[in-house]
Each structure stands twice: as C-alpha cells, then as structure tokens.
Length: 166
Image 1 (tube, one colour):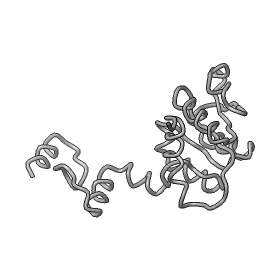
Image 2 (spheres, rainbow, N blue to C red):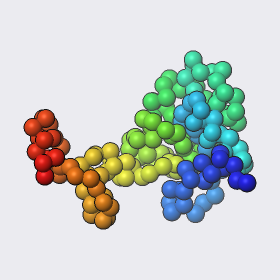
Image 3 (cartoon, rainbow, N blue to C red):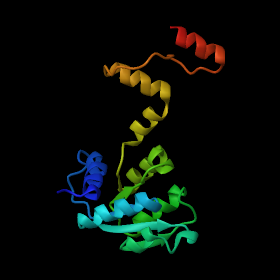
C-alpha cells in the first residue's frame, strides 16, 4: 500500500510537471514542525536529497535532524535568505509547506528568478486567488458554481446586506 508521505509529496510536486522536463534532485523545505517532517520523509522515500532551514531556536528540532543538510536562517519568513540558502545548497526545488510562504507570490517569483522550482502554484495563480473578488470572477468565468455574494469588496455592514439581498 502506498504511504501517506509518498502520496503527499507526489501531490505537492504535481504542479512541477508542466514546468520542466529536467530531473529534480534536491529539495529545500522552507517550513518547520509536522509539515516539514512529512515533506522530508516523503522526499526520502523518493530518494530526493533534502535541505531544511531553521531559526536558531529550532536547531534541535526533528525536521533539522531528518534533513540531509540544515541551514540557519534569521526567520522562516525571510524569503530572500531562504531562496539564497536554497541556491547555496544546490537545490532545484523549494517546498514552502503550509501557511504564509505557500501563499507568497514573492517567494514563487524569487524561486523562478533563481532557477528553483517552487512546489506549489505559480506566482500568477497565487496573486489571482489571494484576491477574493478576482478568485470569484475567475471561478465564474470557468463555470464553477459560486455562492451568492458581491462582485466587489464590501466595506460596510450595509454593503454586505445589499450584496446578500441580491
């Protein structure tokens, strides 16, 4: 039976399929805790070399111990330093995990500029779906059913009531 970690990694790497035909070998995990551990274990099952980043307070964390290499960064949100660490370590992939970095179009752009595959949506997709109004319009253009709502942001309770009234 296929392991959960392998399935998670295969699903996470799926967006890379159309971007490049080159073989990918080294993954930097830009997260900590349970999600980083799951990603690192999945990568190990796929024989992918791993690099973890960590803040100094997390030096003794499990994700640091599981990675093939670990590099200190000032902050998990320091995208410039994280992409620099990935480049220095020879990574060709960067997995943001869940949370802030996974929603960062700036990180996806920085990865693209550095020649590193971002394991996640494109920067353009992140930008579109990060804007609720634009995401709703895109869904409607694609024929995806949407719940009742407004075509523009509501900035007052009266605006919300008007949108809900139809």
